[in-house]
Length: 483
Image (cartoon, rainbow, N blue to C red; front, side, top):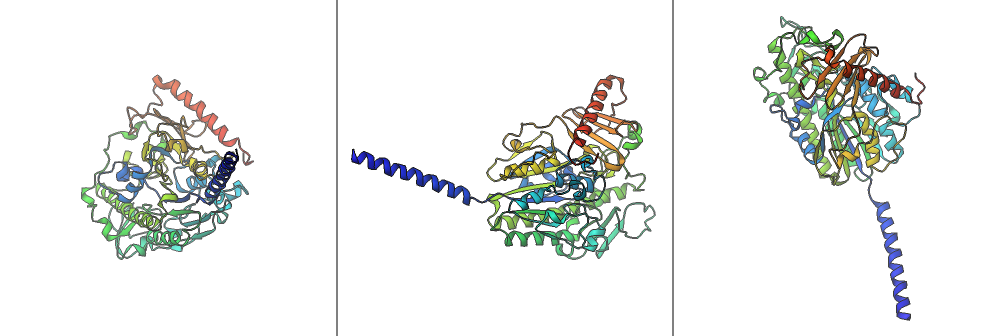
């Protein structure tokens, strides 16, 4: 009897001790770090992990090989300012009124931004270079903060660079039919095969600073935002990155006669081969310069990821790679961003979580979903006010769906996109007074045949009009008090 009682006491002590040990281990367990890498003006079609056969991006590919690669992720604004303000604040652009290049802070008041949420939870939170909007090339030449939000960060660092003034061989491609226009700044298509190494340029400095911060803060939980500015114009990169992209060998998208005939005037992009006066030679050089800029950016991503591994941080760091929006490289004779067509509205999105199996996810997602999803994955509260959705279940089951459609807009151009599995619907102005576009994405993924005015699809169009009205009401029905 005594032996039995002693056994029970010992067993109870073991259970209690085991319980205390479990709790202690749980308390001591490191939080997931977050490494958020964002490129500027990057189309998914330029990445080899998304199928590009000419532009090889081995470092981004390695992130994709370990993570979940989303094939249908969409930005909420098809140019820098609204997109970045949206995913960092947790609200759609029309909820905050940020339809241009300003910070969302005035609109959101004391509500936490994405990185601020982590900072307030005890994370070291830092940005290197462009996370919120920052003028490129102007803000990079100056080394200024742009429309940044100081409250979002423990520390912030800018990466000044020469941009279009970099020594080397440069050519202005835009509005330069006689070749006499000098190399110029601004939002202009310029290619510069630059002298010197990576550290001459902003992205080289960004990678170096990010590596420094990883080494310095490896023993504390961190949220590190690393913003690369390439391939945003000017297409400037060290000369060695141009060697794989002979300009006369670049292949342009197929061109169809009368392609614009069924596109409303409001749907013709603000930059086209016609208004930029770019002949075929200059168009091919623009593609080559863009790819060289992507290759340069990819090399900088590789440096950051190499340091993450060397510091033993791979097993407790979530890595996200994305872009603020897509980019046209001659499709429909469109160039750059702003358009609501697939090349401009869709973004590359890769989320790599330690311990989760690699996957390809074809379910619809929005950049707005990053804030709630990463909060959930890291065990932080997910604020109910956020307008994005938690898509973490897709990382375990890539067939899981949280959205019937993705939403995007192009700000002062007053255009809206509703992207479903089968349909892409674009409406210009909330009353459709400036036209509509409807594309069957199963039969016409390149979006060459606008069905919006076809009587056969009248009911589909009317259904989308109602969905857009409901979506805009949902977006504006929040507690910001702006509308």
